[in-house]
Structures are given as structure tokens and as C-alpha cells.
Amino acid sequence: MIAVNDHSTIGETFFRAADAYADKSFLAVPANPARAYDPAGKEITYAEAASAVRELMQAYSTAGYGVGHRIALLIENRPEHMLHKLAMNALGVCCVPLNPDHRPREMAYVLDHAKVDLVVVLTALQAQLRLGMQQAEHAKPQVVLFENFTADLRASDRKATSSTPDGSTAASVLYTSGTTGRPKGCVLSHGYELAAGAWYSTRGGLSTFGLACERIYNPLPLFHVNASIFSFYCAMLWGNCQVQTDRFQPSRWWTEVYESRATVVHYLGVVVPMLLGQGPHPHERDHAVRFAIGAGVEPQRHKAFEERFGFPLIEIWGMTEMVRAIIDNQLPRETGTRAFGRATPGVEVRVVDDNDIDMPAGQEGEMIVRHSAATPRKHFFSGYLDDEPATEAAWRGGWFHTGDIVTRDATGLLRFIDRRKNIIRRSGENIAAAEVEALLQAHPLVDSVAVLAVKDEVREEEVLACVVLKVKAVDAAATAKVLFDHCNTHLAYYKAPGWLYLTDSIPTTATQKIQKHQIFEPGLDPRTLPGMMDLRALKKRDARPAAT
Image 1: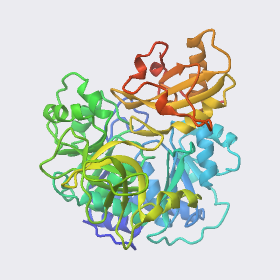
Image 2 (image 1 turned 45 degrees about the vertical axis):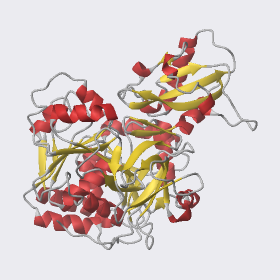
Image 3 (image 1 turned 60 degrees about the horizontal axis):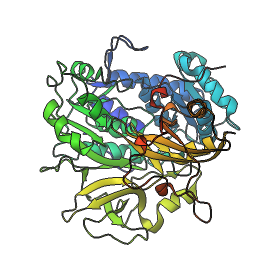
Image 4 (image 1 turned 120 degrees about the vertical axis):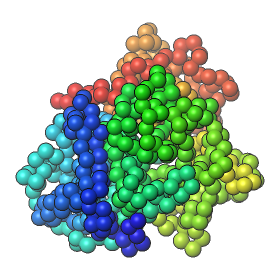
């Protein structure tokens, strides 16, 4: 393993790894004839990656980029995303990945909030970026096409602070949904990202990694922490390979896992029912996978998946603010109980009530975490970008408040119960109910609205919008379609309501605060109510508004 400490930086660590593992595969793309890039697949060795990173560094450096700059990447899940990030980080530039599913208003917010200096964009996504920039209030970054990067990159509009980052230098800003509606930018340092990889790669037990022999298949997006940091640096430090597909596709999962010779796979809760729902596949037992790492498997499907496909689903807990994951990787495991492991030195845990008073064993409470009493924030995120009040509120009392409700038994085993925050978790995406509410509330037909999570058998949760109209609808279905289109035009497709319920009133307190828990009777499945409209078929990933 390539050793790292609190002074290590991503660039120098990568080049040490490239020297040590030169001829080993570093990044792999599975073959897919239907994909727009690398349809035959490809392998990039550590030596080849180092050569490419040096060329990119030269281009960025010549253009004057370094510490103090932020560069956004809008190049989907291509392996070059990570090569550009390594080159940027080696010079001290901070990487801001953009979500290609974002609508213009969402993209405009990130561009404005992150104050990016440059955007590297695929030609196919250039029109989408242009719409976002048109709606941005302040952002006027330079834009360079990915396909013509070296030839077209121009000099930076402002000078870098330096070109020598240290462990505390920002390596990424990743955006995560918050309860106030607008996403928060989590600032992640070089030290954070390397520590996350070192942590994951050394947990042992059922999740033991070998040296220069593992192939980690990760179908998750590179604008999230899982693929771009958690598994990527785990692979890099041990000379292993990250197999980076474009996205999760149930019909291609076993083919890609088999052909890529994956030994480890990453999953989210949505992956499990989709794979179980498929018919037998010739490679569902004919593979090299030793274990899977993920979160959110439904208890009743956990054992069934392991028995059918022949490897353990190892549940973890982590978040963008702290991805040195807690992991349930020691025997005996309690499969099907939402258990995700125990606290360990370096990740201390308390389970507390609303007043931060510790709860007895077996009682539900919010999980709060820290590194240690002496260094509580070590290897956590550096803070929310330009939002010190939110950062300090999350760290009140010297512990980071996760917003997750858990229990801890007498042996210390933690089990996930629910999210305390006003967040909907759909297919691995965190959706702030407040963001959807704010958009619906702005529509001229809407008097009031409440957005909440409703159970979904495949995607864990779905977005349910309860709407009071200013004037009763003559055609409820047509009105629902109008409201859906309004959301789908301005928000990423997965945030639009999958269910919509027109109601005469929404319960409120004396101070007019909406009481979501009183909208439906306890124990009732809202989806079964007369008048509940199922809009899920309208939610299509590639149904983006036309660029103009």
C-alpha cells in the first residue's frame, strides 16, 4: 500500500502509486456497443494514466491554473473525469463535478455558488451548460470543450495563489441536498480524500483487499463521493483497478461484471430489487466477485440476494461530509436487520435525543459522530462552502450531527432506522423536499404544497407532492401533468413528483407551519388513496428540456 499521512497530497501520492504499479490496470471501461464513448471498452494502466495526467497538468499550468481556482467538470462518467481531477489536484486546483441530469436552474445555482473559473464540458452537453449559464446571476466562467481541451484552453482570468497544495487544500466541492432546499457545497481536502481511501482499503474482515489484484466495479456517478473518492482512492493506494461504467443498467450488470473480471462491486439499495427481478443470467454465479459494498438493501431481500448470487452484501454508513465509512464486515453478521457495523477508533459514535442526551441501548436516536475527543473534525469535510453558520450548527457540541436515526444494541452494533432530515432518498439520490416545495409553490395554480417521501419497492423512496390549488381543478389529471412538467423542466428528472395528490387542505400549526405527519393517517399507505395520481412513468432520465 502507498502510505499517506496528514501532509500527503493527491498529486504526489498518485505519482508514487504510478511508479509502484506502472504496468497494472488503473481504470477500466467495460465494453458496451451502445455507449457513445469507448464502445469496445478500454484499460488504462497506471503508467498510461501518469503520462496523461502530466500532459493535462502542463496544459492547466500553462494556462495559469493552480491553488485558489475551481474548475467544473461536465464530462459524465468517462474515465477522463478522474484524470482531469488528478491533474487539477496535483496543481492545487479544486474540482467541482457537475451533474449532467441537472436542469438549467440547478446548474446555474452550482456555477454561481461555487464561483467556478472554468468548465470542461462535452460537446453533447454544451447546449445544456449554456442554458445554465444564461440563468446564472454571477457566474461567467470560461468554457472549454472536452474534445478540444489542449488546443482550446485559454489563459485563466485570474492568477493562482500558488501551485503547491498541501493536505488542507481543497480538492473537491461536492454538492449534497440540504433541508433548506438549496444544495450545500461540501469542501473536501486532499487529506480528507486520501484518508477516505486509506480507511476503506484497510477495514479487513470480509472486505479485505489484496495488493494489485482487485477490480472494483462501481456504476455510481462520479459527481458523488462514492465513486470519485471512496472507491477510487481505495483502488489507487493498493495498485488496484476501478472499473468505471457509465451508469447502472440492470440488463448489463452481470455481463459487465463478468467481462470486467470484477472482484468487488458497489451497489445502492435500488440495485438489489432490480437484479433480483431479472430472470436467470448465465453469469449471475459465473463471476469473480468476492463481496459487495453499499447501503440501503431492504431487509427482506438481503439474504435472498446473497443466496442467489453467491457473495455478501456488506452494508456501510457514510456521507459526503464524512465517508470513512462504518462497515458491517465482521462475522457473524446480522443479515437483513439494516445493521451497518460498529464504532471504531477514528469514528466515534453517540446515539442521542433532541437535546443531545445519550439514548439507552436499543432506543432510537440521532447518530452523531466525530474522529476523537482531541481532534473531532480530523478527516471530515472542511465545511460547507461559504456557509459557516450551517457548518457550525452541524458540529454543535463538538460532534457532527448526521440527521440519521439509528439504534445501537448492547454489543455496539448500529442499525439504520430512518432519516431525520427532510430528505427523500430515491435510487441513491438525496432529494430535499424543500427544494421541490419551493418550485411548486411558485406555480400560479398552487396555493400550498407539502412534499414528502413515500415508500417505493424498487427505488427505496419516491417523491410525493400534496398540493392545494388556488382554484379547484376541472381536470385533475391534466393539472397534475402541468405541475409535473413544471418540476421536470426546472429540476433533475428524479426530483419531480412520482406521486401527486390534490387535496383541499394541508394541516398546519397555529403559526401556519405545515404538519406533514398529520396529512395521512398513521399506518396508511398514501399510494392507495382514491385520487392519488401515479406519475412515475413520466420520470425519464433522458427526457431533458430542449435546448434553445
